[in-house]
Image 1 (cartoon, helix red, strand yellow):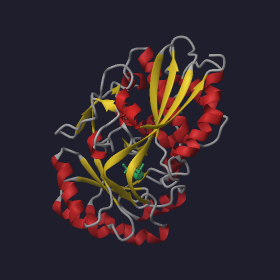
Image 2: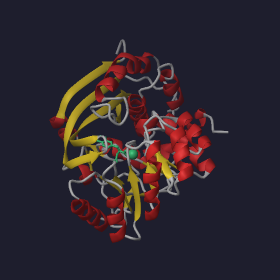
Image 3: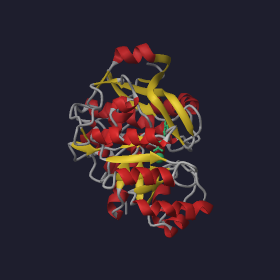
Image 4: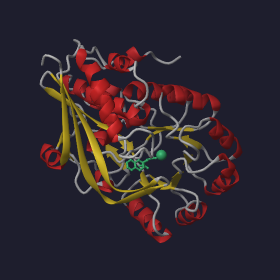
Length: 387
Ligand code: NPQ
Ligand code: MG
């Protein structure tokens, strides 16, 4: 049995009356284009959520992309459901904690990334009101987390090999290569030959089909830590079949859209490793029980990334400080993606390939309000009725 959600309550002592939900869209250029099997991007539309209560602000990030490529959500669908449904539901009455917030939004279906942005902002707010760190509020136990880096599909193999060298020199403990048909076995072989001892994994973002099972089995020769999301985003059954026919451990990302899907994936043996993304699963109300489930089952868990700004990155860092996160996460340094981040200080990776978990209240980083303001393209505010 799983711990009831009430055990995960992060409520302040008295129910919290939210005064305002604010959405903010801003664009950050990427230091280099990032290419996956679903395409290439050279900037990131960042979607920040700020919730205000008792004169204090909590911050979250909606990690949806601009286009429905990773999942069906987009920044525009998230804005729509928050504006028309989620924000009014949360502003209508005080909230006793995260479980009540999740229940309030529970009448609505789908849109996990929109929910997660609100849950993040709420939990940061509660942590700040309690003057506790986000990591402490979530039940984290680590002072630092091991991190890896995700390297996109490159124009040439030599360019990728150079990036692998560079990131290993920076300390990253695990290299993840993005793969797709035509950029897979040969590339992985070349990287593995140069780096025989490195923790190495691959991520297909759903680019293969079960009919490719024999081709994917060729990856078994390279001692990969995992093969992430080889098949379709909404599949569990074909992954179970594939897992039986290859030695490499499958890790699911896109397919795990919540606690129930994760339970079913483990029951079906669709994967042996779980990628946690708080946005993809619909917030902390799902992420925490998924973490408990993985611990209970002895399933290795790690924290994925969605090219978040410092706000989402700080949330990932706090979550990855929980005991069950036993593999290096995709929590790279801010500078892996951005010239300048929205938080101060930016996230730094030590030479030992770890990131320190901040202990200050809430996120434990300051929002760079001047830079946020300078970059903002859209602000939308929803006030509590009667406020
Ligand atoms: C993954 N990310 O694990 C994702 C997917 C991904 C770090 O490999 C813009 C916004 C581009 C979000 C590309 C990593 C993106 C994105 C890939 C997310 O599957
Ligand atoms: Mg992935």
